[in-house]
Image (cartoon, rainbow, N blue to C red; front, side):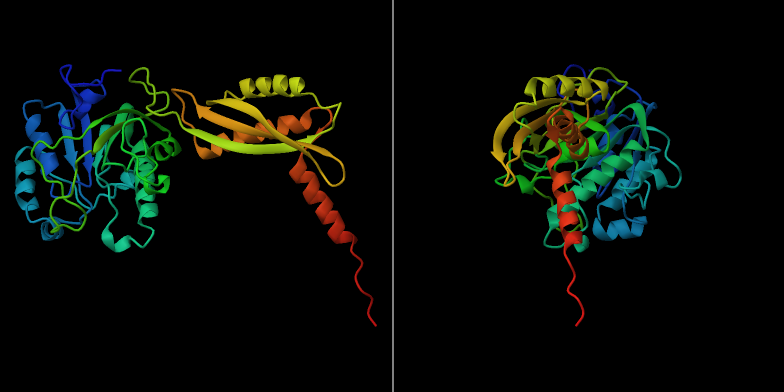
Length: 349
């Protein structure tokens, strides 16, 4: 997959080159004081086919200048380059932008942040929702061979192969999972380098924030038309399943053969590894088996938690279908209901 500018490292100033193009449409969202868009427009002022659309959430220039006084000069620069910014652009509702956006080849969101006034003590949930909603929204306006570039601060992505991990897994933003939920694969990353623009957080007036160790990530659709892809990290999920298995009747060999056929039939987006954990005997002397199911996404396929759970359910259903097998949960619930209905109500006296 073409991914660099003049055989050098990928750069935010050359976003189309990151996906192997030299002309096309680039949308920048949530650009603070618009200084990044100014740098981008200036870098491609000699290429009329590099169509750049800057945008901000603020409703008008006056509101933006209140947050970022330097934005007034940025607006003048962009307008002089025939790239006036769009206002009132919600990165989570890009298909509702007025005027309607044409298909974009690259959508860029540097350091996404929810506004301070919307946060509570569970700030991380708001950031994850913003990231996920942005990616889902980008999919509605992206060209088939397009890509989304997201820049995140050190440790935010959760991509263990390229980013510094935070002490607790719950502290990162789940980029890979958010991308999969939007139908994207995270296929490339590179270090963030600032080449002259301002790094301003939400709310303005608070100065620049720390970008040391930040990374840019390229997300493309599953089945991307721009070439072959391989995701940086293959999402994986683990589930435990159990079912009845009558001793001397239920055969593991038959179970694994039927499971292989069922997974082949459903065009599984992941490899499924099933390993035996334990067996036990119920109070009514029935034998139950417990298996651990490891679901790992293929290099070029999206895998969400929901789709991984469906594969684990196939494992459980298959085990219960084998002669001598049975679904534990279903039968136990049925017996519980029957027991409840059989309780004799006390007679009136």
